[in-house]
Image 1 (cartoon, rainbow, N blue to C red):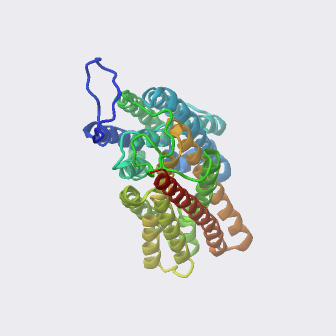
Image 2: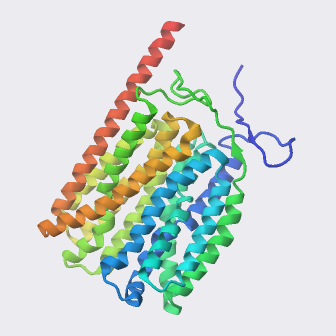
Image 3: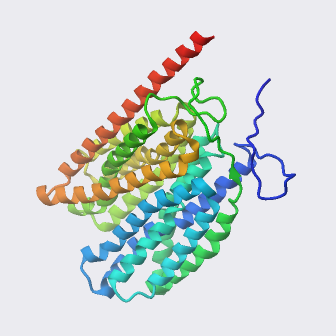
Length: 429
């Protein structure tokens, strides 16, 4: 007898409520809400970048000290993905996201009353922590509501971060024409509280997660099972952390230093900013395409494809430094790298226990953020040593090759495990 398509979930309403199907209309509604949360909640990653000049002038500090709030925000964002993801595994995503959203809003409001760069820096850490709830935990949560379309669902929610980077800087730049950054931060804080909290509470329904989801000899095709792999959960988690670190050290070179690289080549800052925006827009396309690809070939092959393309596009930055060619290469780079980070969330759901998805996705996301921070610093350090970004590009390529090697190894172990499981199943029958 064929298994039913429904996957019953816990209901917040009456006991007579019927089951909710994965890949169904409610799952798509939940995806829409999660995308909105991601677009609103990751404002903290972009707001400070826009207001850095007036903040530096007002607090009368040098550029290094003025950059510390961004570092604090990224540290809070990295830690929050793990901590909030862990609580989301236990009690569901709604309450942690609602609390984090309120903290995010209060962090923005409190930042507007600061009188020193150190006060502002500490509150940026709170903003990063609050915003983290709208990334990793939501990726893990939406993965429980889709099976056939899990790849595109995770990729779509991950696009919220890039959409935030397209929308919020534009809004803040326009607002700075009419008012100051303090008033803008109060407005952002209030907007976050009145939108994130009610949106998060729409996600109160929790999926029923198989607490003993052992790998299936059928390669994860049986509902509630995960794919077999000849690695322990701890070993696979460690490899994904190293892979996330490597890919994002490589990814950070163009994303962090592209504007400065353009200025070194004699182009003005506006051209570099346009290339960065083009890269970000292409990244949205990349995430969606990678999601479709992951639904067909799996998370690990999709990660490998993205890593190979990212490596090739990094190579293109070395010989091509004309204005038109840099626009083209930046667009190609965006198309290559956007789907890499969501692939990790898909791999976690394919090969690791579903009940631990929030925490495990959060750990890998934290590694990617550390990779971005480390890569940005390394590229600057190498530039200071050599006086050129050429060696920095080669450094990024080297880290990218390490990521590719890890992806190849995971793919090999998964393929071998699948063959062994199939052979045992055939022998048993």
